Length: 216
Image (tube, rainbow, N blue to C red):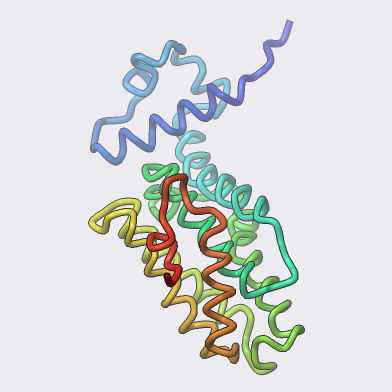
């Protein structure tokens, strides 16, 4: 009888490998499963061996990020949606900081580069909607603006999720995104309201309006 694979075991091994890399522990078959309650055979069952684990590790980061972004409910305000996607990006990094570090380690191959690219295309589609609605100039390049938006999100996420900035520094995302989207043609006051609204949609529980970047 073929045993059904448990997704929780796969996630456990990936999270543990990411944590061990961050703390510079040697990652071997035995050290990886030590204390987890699963056997070394699980690495072969779920990844085909250690080489498969390394490939799956980076990919898992992008899989979780894509799931986080696609879970953002789109509204009639594309600028709000862009900010909400940025907030979801940061939230994903805060939830899995060890895996977030590994996502951008080019020392490991990706299993599916197209799946990783989908995270950027989520932003591109929202920017195209903003152009269609007249919020952004017609000459704006969606891919270029999406890349700039991702750069802001990635820089902030890296500084907050992996240090040295405290979590409330996430509020800096509001003025930075507002400035970027205003440069793309949006009206400043309207843009600020949209960004504040979107940025607060995925804020962790307990965050105040100040942490969200909202004005009193």
